[in-house]
Image (cartoon, rainbow, N blue to C red; front, side, top):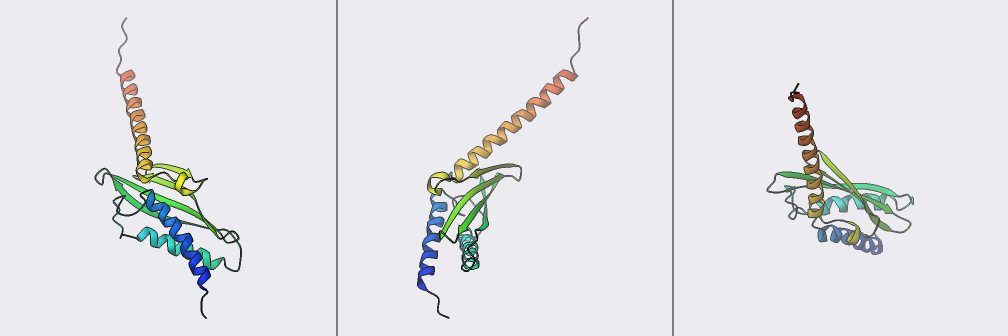
Length: 160
């Protein structure tokens, strides 16, 4: 059976826009120092979107899926995993990035809801990393301060 060119063209236009949004915000293997093969994130997005697109041709249900990529910052010291959540709406023929979950060193996590177009709502990869780094430093400072305070009160002698 011959496939129609209209869905393929529309599919590719939607996909290219989403891939461009990720690229512009530095979410690709090279820009985040990922060990993954170049183009892996784009291929994951294409496959997941294709599955949602094909599965919902007859049934008009929202389809949700995620794609992930891991990168390294500060000379491979900090591992950051990015998980992009998407919703495909077959009624509107629209693919929307709904959130970004970023996790640093499997410890610190921030979820960013994307409520506007990704070109405005999606933070650049480096900015997300900086926010995770700030969170990490605050937790470290709090931990050190608490340990110092505990140590300082235990060893105190009172004068008579």
